[in-house]
Amino acid sequence: QKEVEQDPGPLSVPEGAIVSLNCTYSNSAFQYFMWYRQYSRKGPELLMYTYSSGNKEDGRFTAQVDKSSKYISLFIRDSQPSDSATYLCAMMWTGANSKLTFGKGITLSVRP
Amino acid sequence: DAGVTQSPTHLIKTRGQQVTLRCSPKSGHDTVSWYQQALGQGPQFIFQYYEEEERQRGNFPDRFSGHQFPNYSSELNVNALLLGDSALYLCASSSTRSGNTIYFGEGSWLTVV
Image 1 (spheres, rainbow over the protein chains, first blue to last red):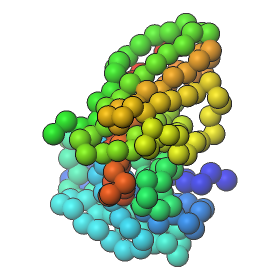
Image 2: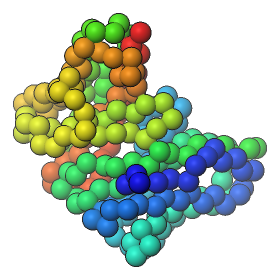
Image 3: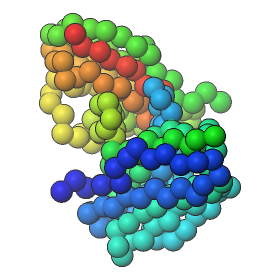
Image 4: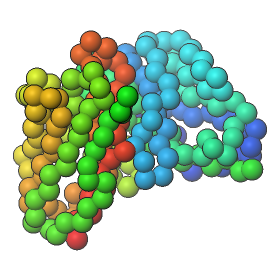
């Protein structure tokens, strides 16, 4: 079993849809959870960062962490064609410059 | 404020050759990590450098080595290249003072033929 599993894709939605992206993990030592967005042939861009369980909102994006279920989600409201990219979940054990463990990534396409 | 910069952006090497990739961290960051991202996969951690020493290492062979310089910039070296080394190599920087946020460069695309 991989440490981090991400819902397989690709995912295609119409513009304006609510998108839900999900990851599960097996290592209960993970404490910090991130979502990165990666456009084609570019480096990952940090979107959301969450510590421990709870919700965090930033504009159209909401990150949710449920440590009891070892499950994290990213919600995108009012999706736009510019949101079309690969979304990677990532997590680490501590904040002291730990390594990131990534999911495989899911490619999202938002149709105009 | 320059972000994480990497060079070269693209390169093609022949099997058996050696390659050096370079990275300058974000201003104010002192820790550099390297990741390998194969096509269709998430990035995999190679190693991390802090204070010019390798602090953590992922599951990569000794053919992968690195260095950090006093100005915090870093190099990734790969010897005896294999076809399977073809990937996007990402440099990530962070700060020991605020190590929770990790920023990536645009990467170096390596093709081994």
